[in-house]
Amino acid sequence: MGEARQFVEEGSSLYLTFALALAIIFLVLASQFESVRDPLVIMFTVPLAISGALISLGWTHISGETSLNIYSQVGLITLVGLITKHGILMCEVAKEEQVFKGVSKVDAIVEAATVRLRPILMTTSAMIAGLIPLLFATGAGAASRYNIGLVIVAGLGVGTLFTLFVLPVLYTYISGGHRYHEGMEGDDGEPEAVKPLTDEPPQPAS
Image 1 (cartoon, one colour):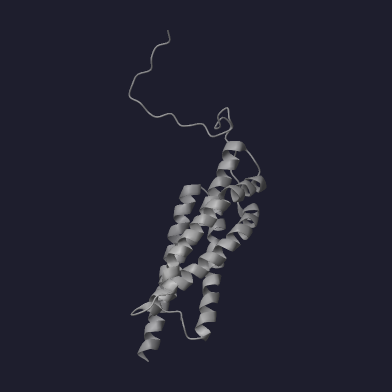
Image 2: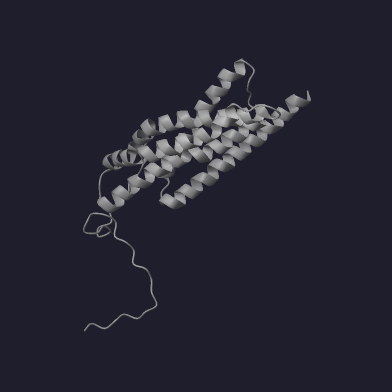
């Protein structure tokens, strides 16, 4: 009876924590991209990653290895912050392509997916490799570490796969696009470097 009451209390607090995490991430992304649609595209990676984590929990729960407890809930909250990074990498490059080079949304997101493919795969591999020891933990507290590791590893793997294929499609339909700012690029087509501020007065022309 006590365990059931504890699970209900933990579940209700999880919903509030999860909602606050999503709201904070959305507001930060909206201020960064100066848009509401781009953060929506990025936030679509969250349910995709969580679906992978819940599927893995469901498979292992059948054998009694895991359950939706406080440790797996902490893993889900951590997964939200990790998986949104992939969408940020792609949307940021797509925005720069439109603002500085004036390309279309489709061409921008294709270029962003091409450029950011290697960084996304490398960071995901590094994160998963760092969490693999949790899946083989033994001794006291091994079950809690296994729950956290399984949720994050499975969520990152499935979420990354969906991000690479689903996010570009969503970007072409949902993103509002960004205006091309003429004169922002240099002679080589790259964004012009911002000149540092200085206190020295301008020199008179000779």
